[in-house]
Image 1 (cartoon, helix red, strand yellow):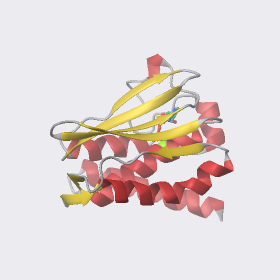
Image 2: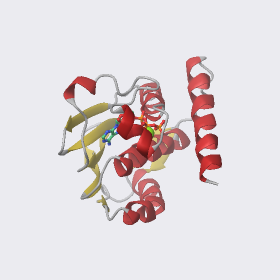
Image 3: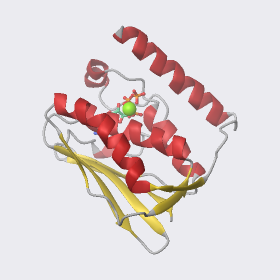
Image 4: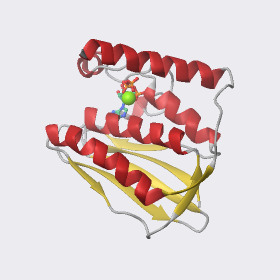
Length: 178
Ligand code: ATP
Ligand code: MG
């Protein structure tokens, strides 16, 4: 069953990447309530984090705050970032941080995991790039997740930024228009 799930995830990622690269990713932008949206994703991930004893923390922004974006695509961004955060964290916590700016909402997914070596930081968004081949193979994956994340965020006229320190953790951030 797990192999079927892995294969089906891989196929979906490959379809996404080829759609994106052939310019066929159709976007559908609208305003949506960011707190309700993130809370529902967090609820889905609590069991997965709990299995590894990782605390999943989310402090909502001000009630009713709306952001502009493609909800399904932004959901995919969160799923990829949270899956990575859980996969590459052995203890501690994962936090979703929302910081309101004048015209944007700054969104970060911060973990206390293994971190990423400095020399790999500018390559992890490439298709199929994985930091430590042996370690990565043990936890599974293809190396497409962050490539998809980057395309989606750039389609929103934003940028995905990573800060990380080996042994301390990683933070991935992007902004959405309010
Ligand atoms: P896939 O997402 O296709 O299942 P993957 O998780 O290996 O596979 P990406 O999500 O694209 O691929 O991430 C690329 C690489 O970046 C990972 O293999 C891992 O080495 C590193 N990485 C990503 N997120 C984190 C994180 N939160 N902490 C530490 N390393 C990370
Ligand atoms: Mg991934």
